[in-house]
Length: 184
Image (tube, rainbow, N blue to C red; front, side):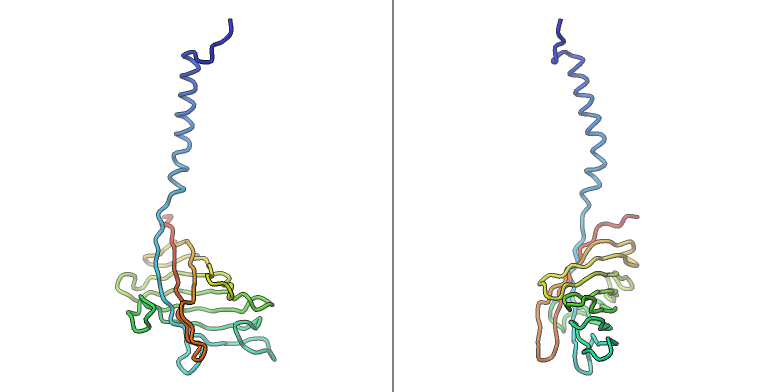
């Protein structure tokens, strides 16, 4: 007599197998659905004049010091505001270094701290690092750490120049930071 695939023991075994499989997959489904936090910041960037907030420090001797000249290193101390308007509330400073890191001049390495001074995050910081592809509209860099409210932060930030005045070398850069929940 042939075994009936629809007999009671087979149905129970199939149902048990499905329950076991679901029990094993539940933790994975939970781990793959974290909520992210989004913070939008505006960097007020001035690259010329006596009040410049980004200045070249050094470069290769005999070559111009510019964002497209390989080896040029810049110091940055940009004001961060809530909105693109430069007179809107200041919420911190973007402080760090930029290095023209590609021979072609197309990439700048960013190593920057976002130091918050506003009431909500005062004393906290985010550490941003990565390659900024200068000639792309959106540049994506990593959020590698943080302090205070952002301890153990991880995520990424997109940088977009929303305004540029070639005459004064003044630009407004929207920095959209996306953070995963802390893994404490």
